[in-house]
Image (cartoon, rainbow, N blue to C red; front, side):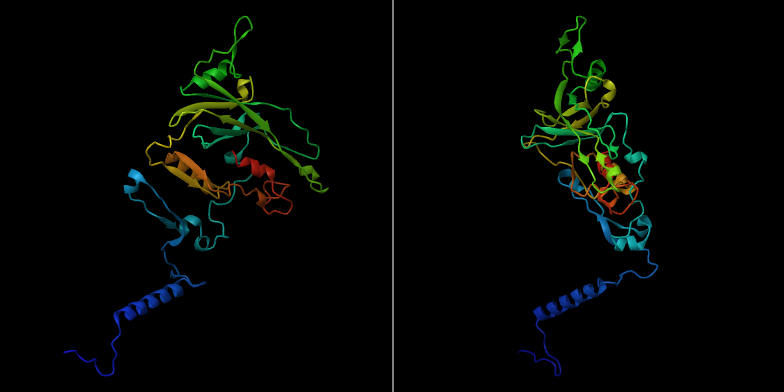
Length: 325
């Protein structure tokens, strides 16, 4: 026998009840996140949910526990810096010009060396760097042309020894002849070097026209996958114009097993915070790093000074090029 519903009440189907509860939940969420409404009471020490760090891993590392780090007002300097992206957080202001972290060497030695790749063939990489300082003034003279050289080896110390003997990649024998086979196990790669200018036509800006440092690019072809290469970069036979020996590891072959540890970084700037992020990423020893964009904020600085914030006369090229440091 079917029981009749109680007088004064109506039976509600289960599906309609679930829909009603869902509507109430969504309404509560909309009220909690409405503009101008803070979910935290005054004086609360709870963290704000913005500016969080998400860690994604594959393979063996995925079995480890990672914790998303929410925004902490004590770290950003104020609660407003957590809610409002237009408010600078503590440590997010660019270093002043001349700070050691962004200082460019003026003695002609290479700086800002970085490696890009691999190319689609899986064996070619591009090594780029700068050398010297920029010139600023109304009368800019073109710099003399120069080449670009990179020495590579799979043996530690071999490149440094080769540069010390003869940075050109060869060594002269007692008779004065060039012996091409002296530096066994060391390869020398040649590339190109360029400069660029930014000239202003306005009378009040002509004195701030800009000639860049030397910018060099060298292709490293035929490198073996999954191999550590030692290298140095330079511009000729003077060993004082060469970098110290450094190293990098090429990516594994496409058929190799993964996981591959990838570092992601963007909106870099020249700040204390971005330096700490960079150092933390280096400490995690990624196999490759992807810079996703917005590396330079030079267009926020006036052309007349790398310390005048506010773009009224074009970007400051000194700030622009110093991002490679």
